[in-house]
Length: 169
Image (cartoon, rainbow, N blue to C red; front, side, top):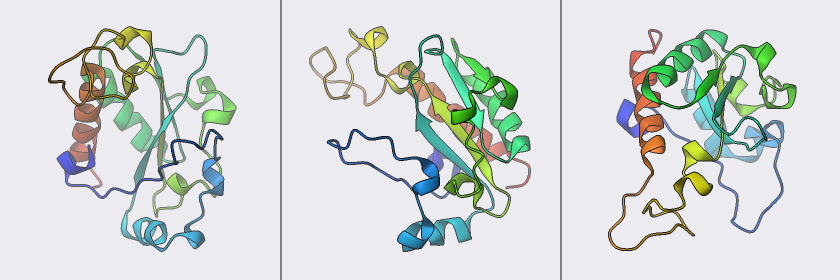
């Protein structure tokens, strides 16, 4: 999405064998020159997180301190990704998924940002995609495969559209 929008990109990637949820507020720019430079470079940020919770497997949650940006991104997701509820009302987002802590890297740019929590299905995980041929590890299917499932492609396109159309870019 960042490449399609001409935006900057920074990723925190956990090793595959790390099965502990690292809270965002512990990802410290003082421990990473690259993260500090990214935060200094951008005005706003969109952080992509994954979550899984019973009753919310088709729900995308938008937290973070920049509520204008959250509303803008939510509108793009609603029109670009079918089959999901998009929740940008903070009162409807579970407290622990709101991403409002001031030490959360998404809130450190000049105008803060949005923490987008994605359920497994839109990330191409779970039984919904069991017979879809993808390049995702452990997926079913054989032969040439697309890199991502259709929902993930739609998500990327919607995020890129939101970034390109953000009026304060």
